[in-house]
Length: 117
Image (cartoon, rainbow, N blue to C red; front, side, top):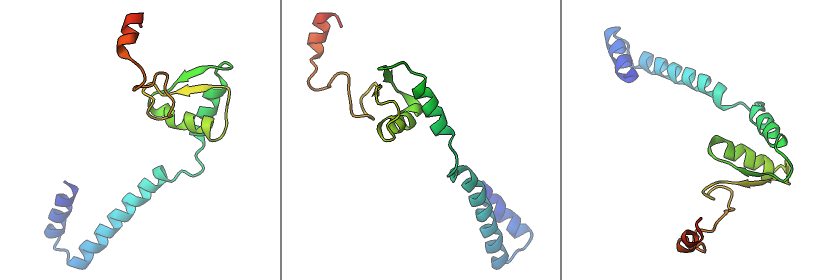
């Protein structure tokens, strides 16, 4: 839509090719500048503070099931930076952290049904 509006405006004001290119480059530069502010937050430490506060608030030797947006930051703090090594972090499907409560191939669903699980 914006491209069609820009084309209509350029034709209506009878701009030449150089003016169109200059305005187009200016618009792209403005979009990049606004986007860079949100994407390049090198000094942004909220996620680390949040993750550390959350991990530190858990009891000793806790088992934590992670799901959603918390998986990445909490797993990084725990596994890479060594925050709270006494905890066990699990992803319910076992896809992210590589550890599973039950192995999908070695677990027999019929045996679980027989046990009432």
